[in-house]
Length: 129
Image (cartoon, rainbow, N blue to C red; front, side, top):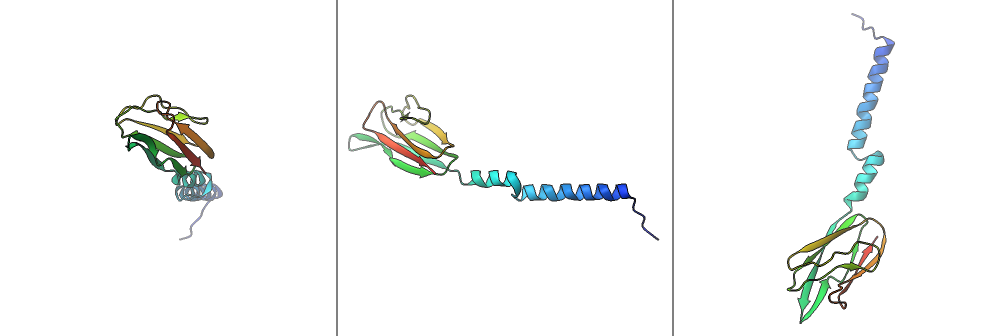
């Protein structure tokens, strides 16, 4: 019994195989879609606490270094209200009450300084690489 394949059937078979291979490559992280996935995989969620230490409030840690695309969450663990006020480069929080939080995502590289408007001696820095 001889198998006769017509040309349109061969073309459809090649097209279907090409589509399957393309889908597998994308699913495995190759190509542009995979590159975007790999870049965002290094992003983190980093917590900065607002604390009281010997009668003085502070951001802890005061300086952090994060990869692009990461989110910083400031959590107020003190008994007073505070702000996370950007010295330029990202949005400011407004008042953050006790046990409340504020978050910002950093998409661009750079150094971003911030402070508390209620307690101006409270300062911090986010370094984005």
